[in-house]
Length: 538
Image 1 (cartoon, rainbow, N blue to C red):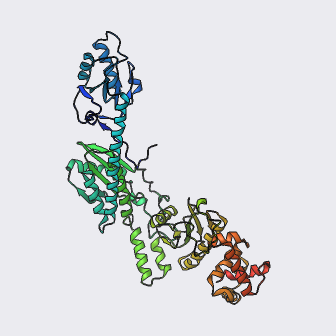
Image 2: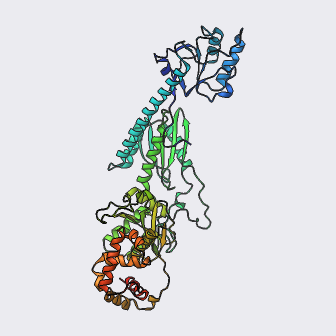
Image 3: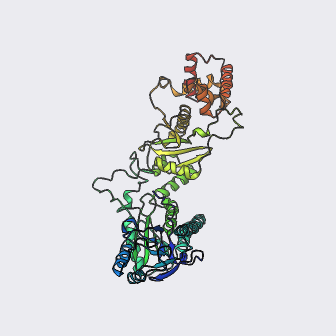
């Protein structure tokens, strides 16, 4: 299946073949239309080549199939079958069968409008086919360069202070037409390029309606939805309210032609109602690819402007910066209970280094830190735009109504569902769940919120006991983190080393240091249990 992001191989103008002096081809019949193109070359000596043609061929024949004494009727039938199959032109080779092109064949091609080329004896059919492929390769390379330059120009435009108008302007220049951004209500928000007439503008606006959802609000989460409803980032696709029908499915793109102008419409984003409309004269096969790239960029640029979601997140951030309480700010984000997700790029087998004995500080990281685009894509997959990529870890705040699922290429740790007041504790839960997932090499671990024996002890008493018991190691985070991870993994040196990204010998040294400072026998299960309970409260 061809890659939709790569323009197809452009056809070769017939005039380009005729201009090749090394071939020596000569047009002896048929129209001299500069728009005639050849998509491939095919050799056949069949009297009826129709079943073997796909259309667009330069059919090459030496006339072996022509019977002795063939008259105009034979040639009329032969040419009519080529035309019916969509053949672009006929090349007739001179020698060894025929010294000249038969006059009846010339007359038939003139009558039915099929270009007829004389192929001289010095030019082989394989040479003609090779020339066709060479010209195709040159045209494809030129088209790919043109598309690449257009991609760079669009990316540069998207980085300008006024990205949306800049992208539209660059796209209209590339297509030599008009580019329009339509809003969710169908109004023209921004446009660039030359006007192509009222008829074209009206047709483009109607085409935009084809790809726009029937009711964009059905797709947009309500940032101030009812508490506990799960509304907010990622809640799109939930059941419609009672009495309201789901929006009809809409195509992601549509095309039409009006008065010789090619029209195209592209739905932007995840069904929020923005549409990119393009109107331009038909030109090159790579134009659709360029317009698709512009649609992707505009989807990213308009994502924060859709509905009230971006405004709600902005308001929440401002309130927090000005000292607002998270409990009061959370409803702006769409819910009362949330999960914290910690994610790390999964380590591929080719990226592991079991024989690397260098110190943790000297070793390179296991995998590259995720970039902002990868982090945003992960957030979208989890159903939230509240993403924080930092220090190789991506943290995502997900509404409790959306259960996080394993994501290909990522290792996830998920907290229990909590209120905003407990977000810091949930952040710690997610970090520990991620460490456990990495150590056990599973894609997803969810923190379990089950009643435990230590819940019977008042929290203040438990914290006081934990501070006293762990005082000798509490001032060294590396020791407490290693002890906690080692206990959670049942004393496994190797899995603890994986979870902490350190060498197994480093784990042994740290655990031995903990045992000495705590004056405790870490092989004793009672000691391990007491330490585990204490670590849960610091």
